[in-house]
Amino acid sequence: MKTLDQLKPGETGVVSKVQGKGPVKRRIIDMGVVAGTPVRVLKLAPLGDPMEVKIKGFNLSLRKAEATLIEIE
Image (cartoon, rainbow, N blue to C red; front, side, top):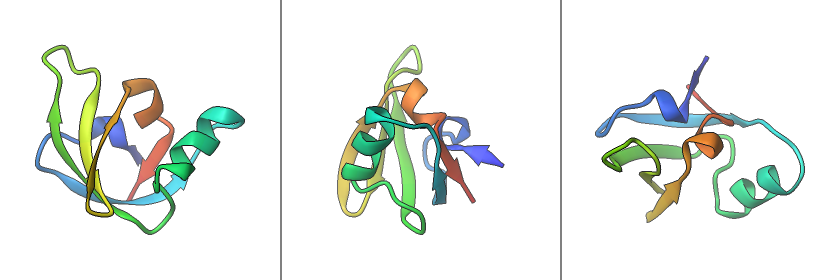
């Protein structure tokens, strides 16, 4: 299974599961990253962290540590 951090700019996927537990998982879900939601990677910072994604019509910046918790189909 791929995770969001493995996608390159311009690639898309559909969220299948958000892993993790506690406040980090709650924060990701509160931002709208839930199963079945399409997501597209827009760009990466020069050193690869953070990454900018488009989800539910808005741009969202995620750290690599957060992106590894999001499984993509």
